[in-house]
Length: 127
Image (cartoon, rainbow, N blue to C red):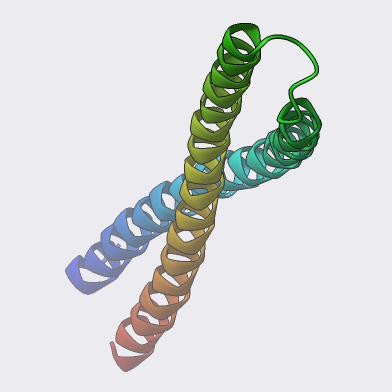
């Protein structure tokens, strides 16, 4: 095997290893992105409906049927409950955003793989 052929073989081997590393990273980001996106959307919709139910209950309980002190304590506990639900909804919205970022990174890595592969083929064809 000549020196030039050996160098081309080594270049191809190293380039293939780099491409496989980028592809595996893209695959991992894709899996994480899909998982986070689906989980965030499902749980987010669940908490949106719980918030809507709690707000509807709060509107109904604002009409004081019981003494004023008990009514204000009841409303205060409902408001706290709604705020806890909203904070959990914010968390799942953040998880959804993270899933979108992971999917974007996956796409960037795949595009990078295509560019590197095309560049490697051009270098090999020139030699």
